[in-house]
Image 1 (cartoon, rainbow, N blue to C red):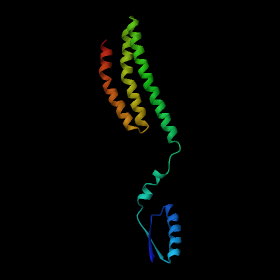
Image 2: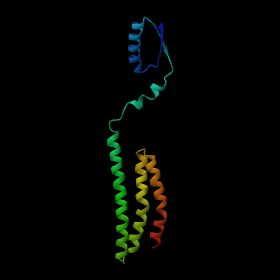
Image 3: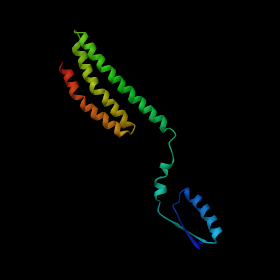
Image 4: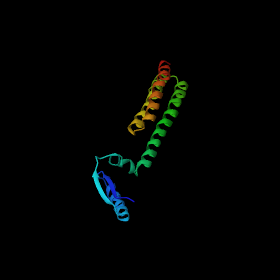
Length: 143
């Protein structure tokens, strides 16, 4: 069936498995084996993709919990400050300043958390939200 078997090797751990398989095939067919070294290729460059990081699910969960905590704190704190500012007249200006500051700070902190955890899609979304919050923050600040 086969008379010669050409085996390209990349000097990776996968080579041993390939040689073991080809050795058995060559004995079965009575073929000679020619080994050739090729430049470190796809298998060597992509070996990291085969190895899964066991901490990745925990890291992803921790990231989502941080993002949810920051977003919920922002969504609850700003309206509460606005209600507080409207009901207490003597320090309303300071409360409105704080509400305006937190209106911009909440999405920005979420964007920083997302980009630090290499979730650039989420980071971009929160940057857009930060920019969209500039108008409400300016309106609150002028109050």
